[in-house]
Length: 96
Image 1: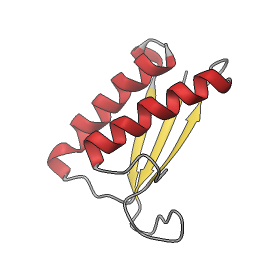
Image 2: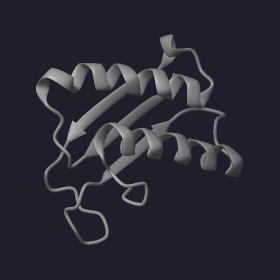
Image 3: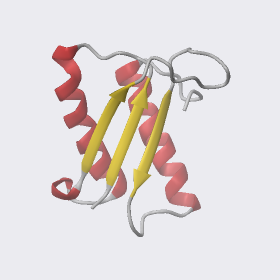
Image 4: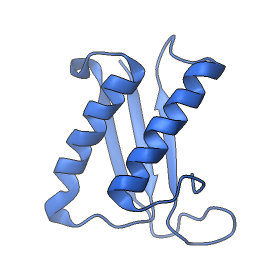
């Protein structure tokens, strides 16, 4: 059962939080190649999250999953998730 925990320093409006979580869940299932029924995601806002010594928009993604990781897969995951965070949260690809 994959679990993905996303921490961001970009505040998502309350009215958009749930939709973002559902989109993140769907993307996670597609990217990891697992049924969404087994995917669990969490998104946390942390105004003190820094990256590279600044408070510029950034994310920290932790993925816990069995038998899903190798060099090729990691590159694919990084590309897919970074692009999603750039599109949905306006966080540059190099900030997480």
